[in-house]
Image (cartoon, helix red, strand yellow):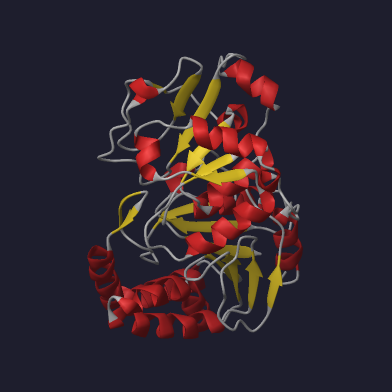
Length: 355
């Protein structure tokens, strides 16, 4: 089987989870080739003879000034520009799929590859925990353009042959067929103790990992001088992060750093939630702007994680003691449920049906 696998370039959550799925699929004999299409290819740290890479954008997502704020006007401008290119893109990608004898299209989480599959005459599988029609519908209150676009995208999603719904999911459009699958995410390769030793973390120090993904903390100056001697901030790969007062270690596998930390301070996103779940690291979460997925991720934090809310002013002023005390003393911070894991195996079994 030859797969055309599109991964959204919005943030790192899509590429981190679908990268895991691709690595698992590459081990299967029924997979002949995977044509990976994304603008986040550089995030992956593996290659394979079966893996064909294409740097191409097939959805817009939302434009962000940083991890905590949405730029709605730029998002609209980019969406309008993308809509103008769709006809030509559809023609080009249809020809590409036919030329390369693609058998199945998988998308995380754009609707446009589903349209390509319809044009080629092959099945398509959606993988994700939200769809862009749901995200854009929230912005109709600000601009009717987003409401109209949401309705069009909902129709595109409805033509998917099948949808594989990940945990932490938002309301979904009426897919022809859908299945809830297990958690997909990157796992640490080391135990917590091994990870702490690797990064030189001291037993008498509390380490808070700042995880603000693809969009960073540009324009935010953290008052690290307010930290106690027994608390240390850690960061890796955070755009715009300051260097003074923050430990920036060398990292070969980010989930190992997640495992080493005592807490992860983040804006909720699928990728970091999955990594914290596997690493069993508590989460201090803050707001992330007007992004409707946030509500559903916070619900997941309440159910499956040791977690507590911290507002941005307290992050900036490095006042973490109160929330750390809270997370360690209140029974309600104990996870209420366990997640079904190993969603990669669920994906393999479903795609095998198309072979």
